[in-house]
Length: 421
Image 1 (cartoon, one colour):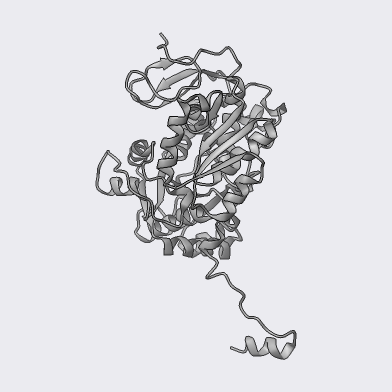
Image 2: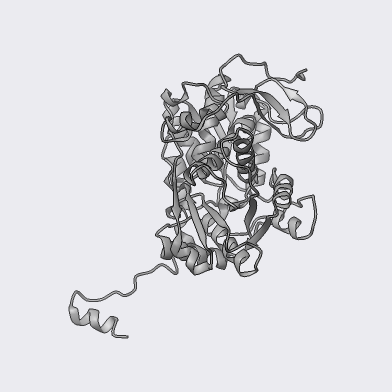
């Protein structure tokens, strides 16, 4: 029996989605713009009745996330609607990086190839469909940067208004990218967690009437977009799961949904069941989940972020406890690296594979290297590491080290002199 909530149920087509369920107590709700259980205040997530899903049907779909529409809370005709069509980004075989780190098999899932150059395009695409279904006219969010740009672009493409909120001290490139799409961009003097609290207040005010906050009242739908990373990795590996995967942790939602995606593929018989280990990666200056993991704790204590990896700077991660559960259940870990190690890892990935990662990618590669060095990650196992955004968004992080090799006069003698040694 469905519990009552403030949102009216909808008859709009959500594909295989059948309702919402509480991750804590299991209470069931009608599909609607709600995100917290009224019984225990636990988070809600989408529940499904998938039916039969076949590899050949997926392979016949478009080369974007809508090839997996039969596994997502979206209508059958979603691919024909105005949207940014994110996904199906490259899974790069990283042999040179693997050799440098001492790994037998390594791939980089490079999500910088998405329309606004981060994985956030995936989650926002699902949120847009929910916003349409619930009759919202404005798309909104609290953001550490990448989400702001993704919401602005997706709203513009879908013909919706947008109003996004960011900490005022974000990287300049991310601010510019979020503002260029013509929606309202509001900087707030405070941390991301303070921005997020403000948005929660705005939802209950008449100013926020008919607004879809992608990571608040649309969060159950929005979060499902991260499952498409799991689907793509498995399909691009030839319909098998990687033995190990390193995932950045901000709110923790991406990691939890990758695990959910893997489990769905197993349940549907699309991949062979085999053990996999999930590792979470944080920046030392914002590492509440890593600290809890190392201390053997189940409770994640909030921190005040202080790191160059601003896209991961969420001091009170909503899905932190679930990340701990998954890391422990799969035999993985949650680890962190300092800002210097982040910069080194960005340069290492660029030098070995020609991939320029933003600071979040530096965190995952840095943690990967640390885990290998400490013997906590199997060097013989097939491994995937995520790069979730483009280095052009966080140029300041490496600007001091990435300089011209020399500045010379336009002559051969000057060139010889500069590189004589």
